[in-house]
Image (cartoon, rainbow, N blue to C red; front, side, top):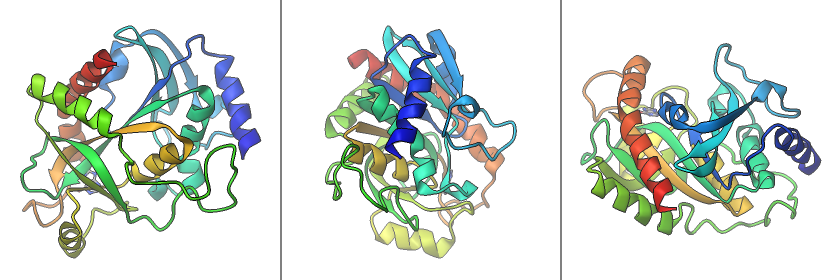
Amino acid sequence: MYDKVLESTQFIKERISLSPKLAIVLGSGLGDIVDFLTEVETVDYADIPNFPKSTVEGHVGRIVVGRFKGMEVLILQGRFHFYEGYTMKEVTYPVFVMKLLGIEKLILTNACGGINESFHPGTIMLIKDFINLMPSNPLIGINDDRFGPRFPDMTEPYSLNLIELAKGVASKNSIPHGEGVYAGFPGPYYETVAEIRMMKGFGADAVGMSTVPETIAANYLGIQVLGLAVITNMATGIQKVKHSHERVLEIAKKASKDLSSLISGVIEEF
Ligand code: HPA
């Protein structure tokens, strides 16, 4: 896998002139921030050797590199989800490529369901820990020490420094926010009432279908993570209506402005 990742990295390096150390993964409906980049250069996933092939037709899948508030950033527009049928290695392939590109900090964003009843649709939850409920993880298999250790530590999967920094920015800008534990379900169905009841008992504050595999890979690779989970709905049984993907996207789109302000403030602090 190392040589494949290296080949992908080389291909990207030849097509971008900036060398960002910060990367951002944009979740469903959370694409706003790309509009504010300057000196933009893009590379389509489809052109990158060894990159996973997108299963969803018409889905944007590209790497966008540019400057935001003067800082060089790399943005992944379009992520690979486990529920789409990708293996965990494919889901996290871009994170491995980021490592060889020199990325040191990664902001992972997502849309999710709120379990903690102090949250509301639109709240941004700063992720402080995760519970992995997916049936696998990206580190299963033979370990390559060039990437990271066989048994990586997961005491602080989300950087406490970055959480504190983001909390300060959110408070200063009156962005509705909270802090909590993100439970990663495989999806693609929205969880059952009993599953959410169980997760509440287990200490989860929000539930979603992404982010955990990338967090695991990033920690293994020695990349610092900030996780920003946008509550787009309350989880099953907590909200009294059935789920609607359209509604999720609608709330994500509205919250995208707050998310962009938060990320922008965090980048200014860097
Ligand atoms: N559950 C899982 N994933 C989600 C949800 C949810 O309630 N909302 C948005 N993504």
